[in-house]
Image (cartoon, rainbow over all chains, first blue to last red; front, side, top):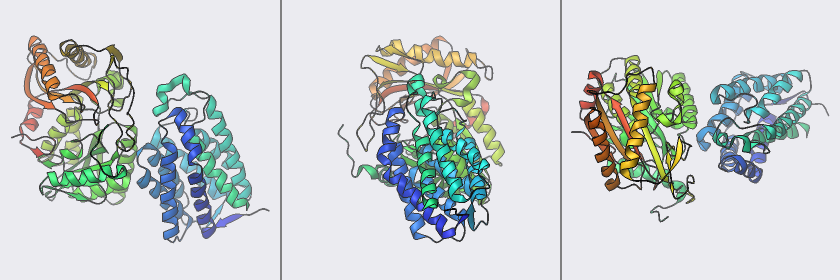
Length: 211
Length: 337
């Protein structure tokens, strides 16, 4: 059933579902990172999203921007390191594009994703093809530009699929950033753990909007 | 590894509490995990340093009298998150700007940058100078990508001294850049440290090998060479520093008549005995080249738990830098009378 947009309280529930899905996925993310990094991505994301959940359950929010902003700050302060900064930047940069919004529709989704994608690339210095979270985020942002006229549930479905196919394509890439960089060609064959997290985040949003 | 700790997840917080006690009242903890000087004059250009815990006595041990005004401390081997950077910045700001001075690691840069943005939103002007003294981590033409290692002790000492008298943030930034440019280090690793929470080694290296230029977290260096003697290794390391001054067109060669600071650092497990044996050889090498050592520091100041390894850091002095070096200072990490 088509749903045009999510209101503030629905958006809040959507981000809570994202947090719960990431927490559940800790073993998958840990495994993904063990192949390429130091295996701490799953635990870090679990810690970050546990903080997000606590924050979202204890505070009240007047608009959509403040929900994403609070999620970003909670991730940054609880995770530390590069991934805390990058995932925190994703939510905080995206939030900046949602000034005063009380409804999250497919056009807001696109504004959020484009700003988030720009923010994360500027912060981390990675580009598409470097085998990072950008390889799922960039296709998701591009897809959102094509889906601006769709109902929010359909737009989120398309964005989630784009993020998943980006994650799958990261398997064939050679890592040029972060800790996996030292593996060079040996990094081929495994998806990037950050890209896996991005795919889970948008699949959870789509799942919420479709139920 | 037998480690005298309590809850492995509270290691960083508990060591900060202990550090505050070591300061005997000169420095205090603010917020979650920042250490700041108790008294900072109004209008002073403030200096903030920081980084992950686990490398004691740096970074937070470099706060003190005529030393840094504050340090933002992360968890073990992890950058301080932006809210800690912000709380430290707010606590030391005296209305004349804050300089961030820390080692160039991706996690630190991202978190300090976000901290700077948050501070600016609160009306505090921030500038950043990255410490990039590890000559083995990138060639001279891309030296801005280099990591920060032990040379930071020399750099923070001089920039802190300068910060007591400069009038503007721009002037302190200029001095910090000059100090970083003239300070170069080369390190070696012989065996890893361990992560306190898990006991796992921070990296792996073959028993019979030395990682020449290897980073303090096991980042790859120039090459792996067979284990050797102090007298064989020391000149090889100093050669790399001299070569770097020669190859880098932004600085003059290190040559006869130059005056330098020399810092021989242990990564943790390498003993003072070994450092002194290497220092003796280093002095012989420098004498032969006619380079005069103005002052020497030796000891385990930039460590990585029980990692064994050593580094040499050299600052080439001019009259200005010498003036900053001569200022007496007191901190847990380094004190000069």
